[in-house]
Amino acid sequence: MIDSPLRAIAPSEIASLYRDGAVLLKNVLPQRWLNILEEGLEQANRQPGGMSSNVDGPLRIDQFPSSQSPALARFVAESPIAELVGRVLDSPVRFYMDQMFYKPAGEIEPTPWHQDTCYYNIEGQDLVRAWVSPDPVPREISMEVVRGSHRWNVTYHSWVGRPLEEDPEGAERAIKAMAAGEPVIGVEAHKTWSYANAFRDKSMPAAPDIATYKDSFDILGWDFEPGDVLLFHGHILHGAEGGCHSTQPRRAHASMWAGNDIRYMHRLGQVVPDPEGLYRYKPRSGDLLASFPDIFPIVWQPR
Ligand SMILES: O=C(O)CCC(=O)C(=O)O
Image (cartoon, rainbow, N blue to C red; front, side, top):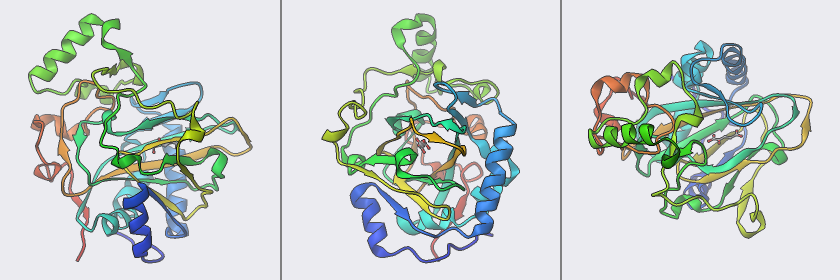
């Protein structure tokens, strides 16, 4: 059973998400879900899985942490998050995947500017990310987005991983997998995985250097309070500043939700493995996620 948010989303908030690519929904999550979220992040942090990774220094990012933590699994399946996303998309929503960003106390690590699209084997417009924290997160270390960049109609290559020329044998295997209609990252990656194993597919453009030329971009950012939910479009350029000192860890959970038009798509630069159960279906590019209802069940739909 999905729990309801503390309040309805205003039409102006929905308009902001479509116009700007992101909206901070103030005070929508009840306290008990913040307790479950906190318990879940601590559970996942204590039990690193095969897809826990320190990308750059102590910044810990886990893929699919809800498969490591019963509390996060409950948060995904029953908290008001799915309804908030569904109200924005005005359609049934399916859970695609989640991540944990756990930045230890001390000097907070930044998250480099990036677009999520190229990391996953999916494409489409009805893609919304829900980012939450059980902690107050001041603007200096919270999420920022380039306003409107979800509408630039471009998919950049990832900044993680290595160029194809650096590993000719691996590149040949990846190109063969693409030709055979198989994912470049196999199911075994769910047991042992690293950002460094991906290929940077330079047939796609590099993302602009927002960190260096930040003043040239229209940046949106927020002071986040527990109970708020930041929704942003799956294609938007986003990142987080670091460098400040914090006595508390900066903990966040981000879940990716798919609406009606999201389809599977093989990518040479795939970084994150497909959801584990999907491999046995051998999905083809163009298949709707809705064709795999046991892997991507509807979590919430409008009545
Ligand atoms: O929490 C962060 O610092 C980064 C989050 C992020 O990149 C995401 O949710 O896609």
